[in-house]
Length: 484
Figure 1 (cartoon, rainbow, N blue to C red):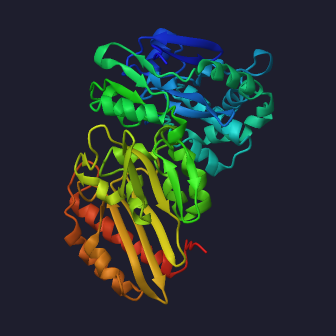
Figure 2: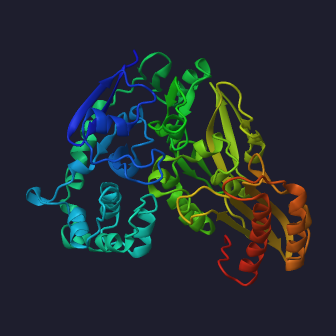
Figure 3: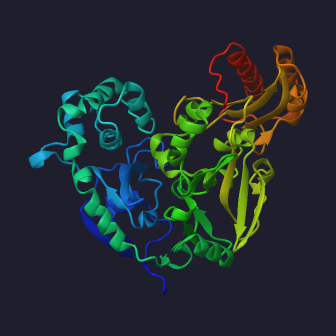
């Protein structure tokens, strides 16, 4: 099939077909500059403040799933085949305010007003999923929205009272979901898309096999999944990323397979996609998972992207390494599998050849006697990058530690296991003495750096204290979750 040279999507209630879409063109710039939809604001241009929040509806098993995302770091090419909804599209019955908007007015939830449209869009997405949320659900939905006027209390009250002014059953997106899904299906012709000028071109493969061929033929291309990192390369560092291969639309990379002994996921599975699996099969990691970025970033960011980026402070590697995860790399039709910790070679360097990509992650299930926990230390509790992250797995049998995996982020040039601390624990009876020896051994495992997030001394003390916390929590029966 001849490649198509335009991207197609729905914007509110209009069908859009755009040729020559540059890889670096952001959705936010398109909305504000080209379409004058200025309700979507630019605050930080790095996916941190939520003022640019829009909803993106993507086809999923015959229906549409609407998620709030950051338009400032979402590239325009990535909304191919999607429904983009801005605050201008909201309305209630007979043209009245939308129930979420009316609740914000009634509860005085808008102060200076700059962040209000983004907050409304996040609460709109929550209202469609959970019409009567509790406070914890509201706070989690608002993790990615910063209100600099510091008035979150009326915003929370607005989220709690929105159903007084209407229910999702009568909402436009709910009522028209099947029709919109059919319109999006008609836009998708299964063709590869190649669009944009010269080196700033965007390539959207037809499927995963096509992706493998395109990347092998263009090994210098930038792979763009959720753009939660790559977006900042453009908006903050003005880096060229073209040619860029966009893969967020590839259903073959979003699969989740639940096996008896392991769980296998495609590299394109987002944090939000995987959250229900965490809750059902790894509940010991649920709190940690909810602290990865904010809701908008969790909806866009992918587990495979977090791994492939190779950041020493990536959130997922410590926990996944502790679980014994493996990854599968692919080059055309050739595949190889390696332990996740072996993928990280040095700062900015991974064991990935030209034209090779992370295709799958395999995560062993938690075994009887295995205790698993992950921790994150950051300046803000929510929506912040780790100063130190840790994933711990200890397996007990008759009071003895028969296996352990201790992985840290933020302590070295790569996510790394603490080999000497593991050796100090292995074969020892479960007790504080063994963990104190492991804490002392950490100084042989790591020589952390000082930077804007934490000093070297702070990082080492935090890493040691997290080990002690792990022991104390499980010694006293708090938050122990063992797989049967």
